[in-house]
Length: 252
Image (tube, rainbow, N blue to C red; front, side):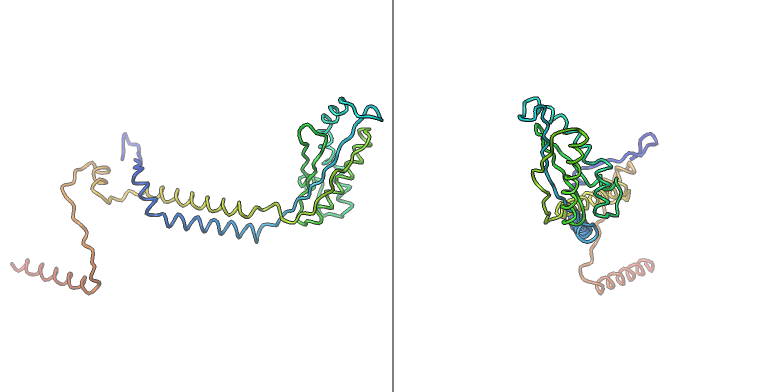
């Protein structure tokens, strides 16, 4: 429909609803293909990543014999500094040299994540790696090296390892079930969007309402389409009869 030389697309939501219902099999098939593709890529093309987590406890005392409330507050404030130190270049480069890893400081730092549970002086150091055993070894080595540097640089009493790195059994990435679900949802959304867009930009006149909408003309009547239910043989007979009738009409 055109108004003031501007193309305006009218959206009939009821028509869109029936269109979706009519093309539902295409949408579901697209969702299945998307889910299968995402599952295949996650299982066979993406390298699995394992995560090992270790925990250390930061001890900072003003009095060497007892821990005061101010010590607890100071330790909680300093855990942010400790978190940065864990991913510092001296720590990562020492670990890379120890295990002769073919990675850089930046790459190893990206594999390390440090969290401090609120209100505690505990640091959770998690390391991601493609090999589960190496992930555990890296977590333990980083915790040990970082603890030593905390004690020497920040002049604190000591850092105790509460829990050594665990040996991961299942990969933390890729998350195959989540990727399958996401692939299916994307397939459904994309296919539905394409179907709706193609329907909206299709200006073929199919009904009397389309004639009134696009041509601004009133229809006097419609000629129903005669469907051939008797096969090609019957269709051939109808064509022959039509030719005979036209011939008689010309003779008359």
